[in-house]
Length: 127
Image (cartoon, rainbow, N blue to C red; front, side, top):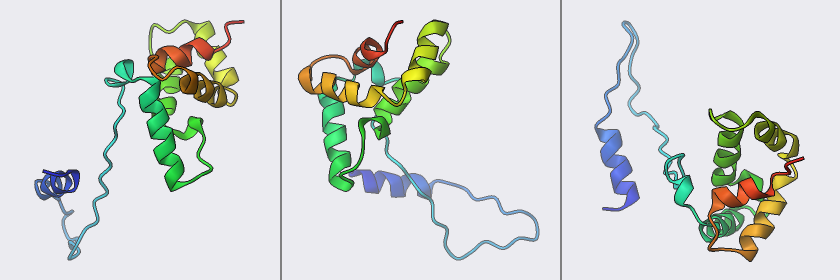
């Protein structure tokens, strides 16, 4: 089964509850997004996979930066918000958020077998 078929099957199982007195239109658009990266998959993600994601994103829009790729946004968001991350690390990510994408891109290009989250963590300045 292809992803489109799965999405159509999923949407077909949804129930719509209409408020009393309201009418249901003849058709409803339900946006479905397939996301490769989640907080559960990021620990296993390699830089090579990130490189492939970035290359694909750039086929859609050549001006996409590493900072716009979902894996980067999820990783830096987790680093700033997850419990257990030292406060100084959270602040360092926040202070350097705009300068991190090109550093991550360069590191991942040089080391495609490296773990992505560790690479992002490694480029965050510690001072």
